[in-house]
Length: 129
Image 1 (cartoon, rainbow, N blue to C red):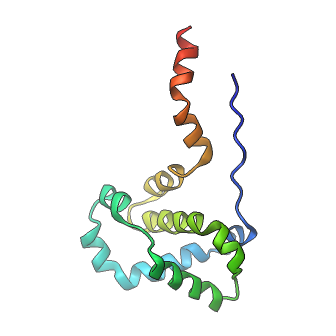
Image 2 (cartoon, rainbow, N blue to C red):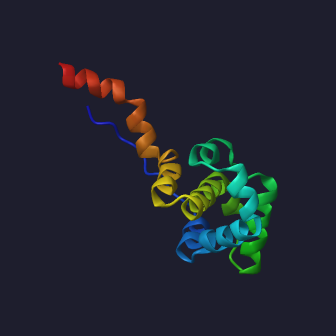
């Protein structure tokens, strides 16, 4: 049977931040300021994926960066906060490790991928019968 998955939507804030390149701009600046630390602390993608998180301080720094660029809405930020953090982590993964690793970060939070993995056993049963 088909499984219906509701489209995961972003607020306009997240879409504008992405389309105007603010995730990338901030991540480049952030990484340049902390390059030596991140090269040493997260020498492999697996370590980065497992251990790196955008804590409140980093999120506040990003928020300040966006406010300075006159692109911010606190209400929308609260709705999309976790998605914004994932976008930033994925962009940092792109800068440090490359596009495949960036995609891996994004896909592990994709609602379609999560649903497919959750229902993999059901799909196997269908093919066996």
